[in-house]
Each structure stands twice: as C-alpha cells, then as structure tokens.
Length: 83
Image (cartoon, rainbow, N blue to C red; front, side, top):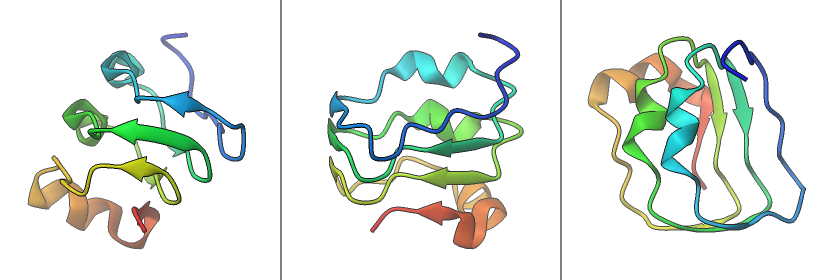
C-alpha cells in the first residue's frame, strides 16, 4: 500500500480510532474520513504526509486538539476539514 495515492473512506461507518500507521502512506494526496464514528485523537503523523492536499476529518467524534503544525494547516487551507 506504500504507493497508495487516494483512500476514500467517507461514509463507511468506521468506528475506532485513526491508526497512527496511516502516516506511513507517504504518497497519499486525498484522504476523506468524514461522516464516520471515528473517536480519539487525530494522529499527528497525518499532518506530516508530504503530498496530502485534501484531508477531511469532519463529522466524527475526534478530540478537538489538532496536532498539526501551523505550516500544515496553512498549506491545506480550506482542504483541511475538521467541523
């Protein structure tokens, strides 16, 4: 899965935490995880994905702390969805 570029898991009824190991998918550019039952903390490694340009974590039960550096938030801009 190392070459995976897009992983759309929105609206899939996922219930658990986001695995920290997702940060090893270094080629991901598109990762919608919205509208699921995800809980817990957002893994800081997601913000370190070098090619990510669309990350949607909205409509889950994730903790409110966003562990991404300011540069990551600015780079993603409106493509980072947390509501």
